[in-house]
Image 1: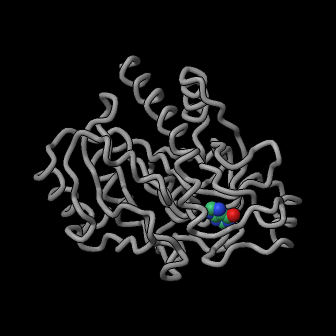
Image 2: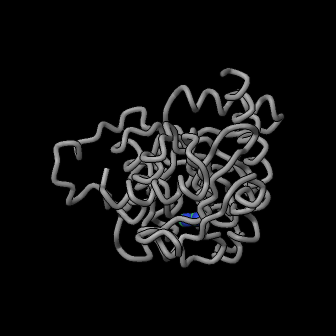
Image 3: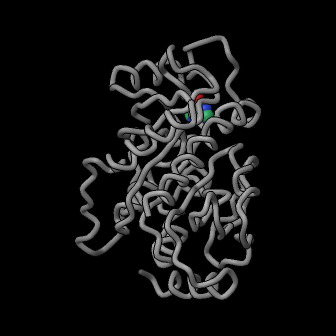
Length: 271
Ligand code: HPA
């Protein structure tokens, strides 16, 4: 853990209390609403040196520490993307801070394009695995042997199953599938989407994979859920744009919120 992360974690504890965090939630484009429903302390990223500026519209750049359904959470209302800086490790410090605050789990959410006709706009998808189509890696430059992180089952099978059970409880249909990371910021070509389908991907987006690699590096269990905001390029006549993503995100976000709340409630029941 870097000294910087330890210092930030101390500062955050001074502001928001010492109780350890159980779960870190990273909110994707258009999914920031959940942060507003947390009973806790909101700390702007600008107060946390080294945190990303979260310059993408549709993101809410606060770290909110508090309780959601009785579970102590750290909600990251915005993330840095590889395409903003060319740095795949842009989320390393926030995730180091999450680990320093005692969290055992990181759950990332994102907006994504669907490559499956049975998974239309407004669906949600529990990630089972990913394809690093961007080819970048947040651990490039990490000098220790800890960089050789195993990625088998990086989407924790027990958490995936618990999320699926929570979806059933919440009466929400949640798909499962493989997420492909595309660097962005331009969207994919039709040929790239054809290639990704052949490779076995079900959804495509511009985030999450670097965070999952970093989470595993830091010893956090990882899980992720996509909100499908559009059919991927060439899959329908739907327009693809960032404003369309933000417009459509609330459709899946409402389902996502119900699943997350049911999942957190069960954690309280099981303790
Ligand atoms: N491609 C990449 N990222 C995305 C998409 C998409 O179609 N939709 C939302 N984020």
